[in-house]
Image (tube, rainbow, N blue to C red; front, side, top):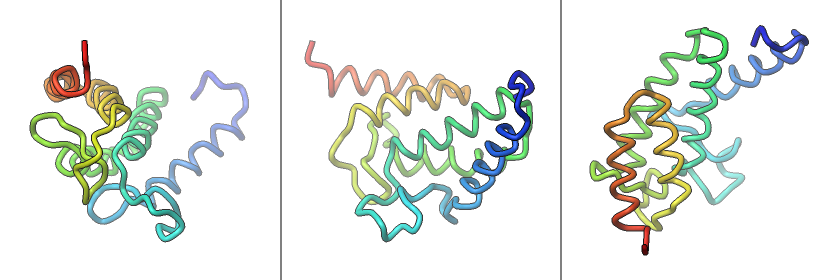
Length: 134
């Protein structure tokens, strides 16, 4: 944040994140597109992970806590709705299948970055058990 010499780009990034935060649904996740009717995808797993990862990265780089409530609600939705307790990723908020390695990988990255290494490990264990043929 302060490492970038162009304040107009920092300001633009914050406006984008403000918009993203404003699009969080009441349940805590984000639809794939705005408007939601523009895609057959709804609140899919790995794109919700990307949003949360971006908000976490912003906090890490800037030290700002302005999106902490958004993050808390989003991470709760992500874990509760887009993953099974076993660590298996769900496709979206309504469908468990198909299982997708991108969703598993994003879950590992996101929960590790958020400090929930126990759940990240559970996703790793599930992925090695169910998606790895070695």
